[in-house]
Each structure stands twice: as structure tokens, then as C-alpha cells.
Image (cartoon, rainbow, N blue to C red; front, top):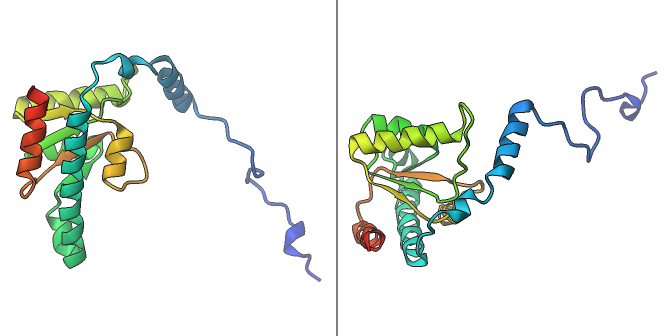
Length: 177
């Protein structure tokens, strides 16, 4: 007769509550985060008014994109208004699709190869060459909350901001003041 399934040992699974050891790369990233924890706080902080105007702008653009998605998901996927993430924004800036880039103030800056700092510097240089406005304001948490995303959003690329020109113009005027 067969034994009950509960007596068969499960191989390769970690017992509940036991954490895996981090890889060397993850350990290096964690050490860099700890060492550069307060660097972003020492930067010149932006005004709360600029943050509020940018969050309002993002909510408006996200609302337009969501409304279009509810009407027709296929057309909405073809005509995006927002993109998230460094690599996707870099790809779209090279293709001349991005009109505006928003970067959070608390992006981690590392001095290690193949990490976020090199991607951020690459994005900044591409935006400079293509004459794409880059606004650095707010925090990752505020960006993700405004865009209803579960993870943190450190960069946002705006492809089309028609319908919200007034909001972005007021935010740009606040940034220049």
C-alpha cells in the first residue's frame, strides 16, 4: 500500500521562516545602499509645490491611459502615454518617442559597474543629446502611489501629455522659479 503524501520528504524547499543567503551581487548592492543612505537626503530638496503639481500631472496622465485601456485595450497598448523603468525609457528615448522624463530624487547612486548609476548617467546623457526635458523631483514612493503601482517607480517617461499641458506647464514654471 502507498504511504500518505505527508510522510514523503520535500527536497529542495526551505522551511518556513528561514531566509536564503543573498548572492554576492545582492550583498554588494545592500552594502552600497547602507553606505549611501543619506546621500540623496543631502541633495537640494525640491519644493512641496513642485511635487504636488507633478503628482497631479501624473495622476491625470495615468487616468487618461486607464480610460483608454477600458475602452479598447488593444488600441491603448499601441498608444501608451507613460512608460516606467530605466531600460524602457532609454529604449524609447533612443527611438525619439519620449517627450519628458521624470526622475525621483531618491534614486540610489552607486559607484559599482553595471548598476543603477551607470544606467541613470546614460539616461541623463541621452536626454541631453536629444534635448528631452528631465525633471528630478519627488520620491519613488510618491511616484508609485500616484501611478497605482505596487513597487517603487524611480523613473517615468511621458510619451504623450496632450490634455494635461496646463498641469505640466505650471510644474515647469515652478521648477524654474
